[in-house]
Image (cartoon, rainbow, N blue to C red; front, side):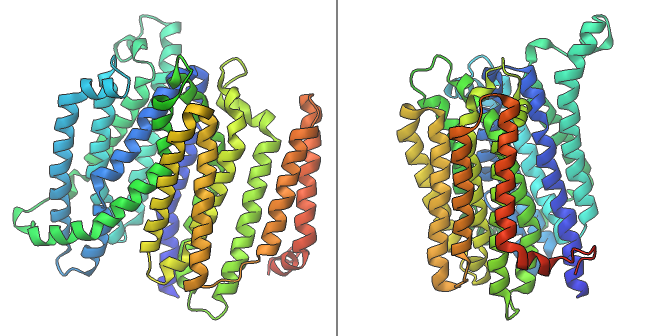
Length: 498
């Protein structure tokens, strides 16, 4: 019990910075969308999409391989040194390529006038890569507080610097043109300050690890490196496939868009709308953060499968509540991504598809228990690759025809296919009797209320929100009607939790 208690406590400490970080970064969206037009925000979204791919490629599964080999090694420092030397060599090579060909790369991705964007973000990715194994070492050594502190420092710095350069400096310079701000701020850099903020935060984070980077040449082991690379390459495949599913649309959209004079402007509209769907992503991440430790600590219980089925049902219920909540109160939430004159609100029609795609992706993650518990994680890789192929192929086919709406349709389709595949295969290897009848009923009611809102909601904003609130209450009443007995079993409504 003490081991499980320690595991649960450390899981909280390791997981919170990630969840808090995504939430706080989400709060930068109003800063960007109220300061910059969609074309400028599209540049940020496009380059950050490339960054996510290179973050996966540059670590090439080495972080997971480090956990695997250092955890069973009698000389974990040898594993640390071997990992760091490998990543160090490939990272230096990457920086040399970026510095040498920044102008060519910026031209290829349509930023001919801004090779500095490529350099700034390339160096940022490199610095983050060099921090990957030291962060993993902290986890292996059970040092969660230092891990969380450094993660939060990185997140806090990037957010503070974004606000400082993009919001505060223009205000201070406008109030006093002769102030010190003129020496540290150049209005022409614009959205580039977002990239500079991430770069500075990454550099300072790496500085904290300098004392830990004591590498002895004698600790490098070529044979061990080959074993680690062999172990890590499937992780690389899964990582790249995952990034294709989540980010490739932001790369393909400006390349394939037909009939638009400014495809990056369109990408900015789509990316801003996608920020509203991140509310579902945050819920899923928080759920996984608590569910996965529970999963591995209870799978030997006799009634574990019954518990998993109940958890899935309530996951779907909460996901549908978030879906309807965002849709029904879009008249308020839309101001999170700029005012009505900015152009961002045009993309709101894609939000339902992104929300539902994220919900099915969450169901897929929740179902993943079966191949994790049966040590058949290769199925996860197969599902991810199938999803990636669907995502890439359909985006290439549909973006020229449907524009950014294709991205929403394709993301939903890919997530649904992966979920269905996982369920069908999982029932063969690890059958769980999910309450599909009741889950289906909740989906049916939620979708019916969504359609009613679309068809008959009043045009007046106040009346529409009042009408939508009534629909929302109907869904809650339906849940109460169906789940009353179970909810009363979970809680004592006289004031004490059972």
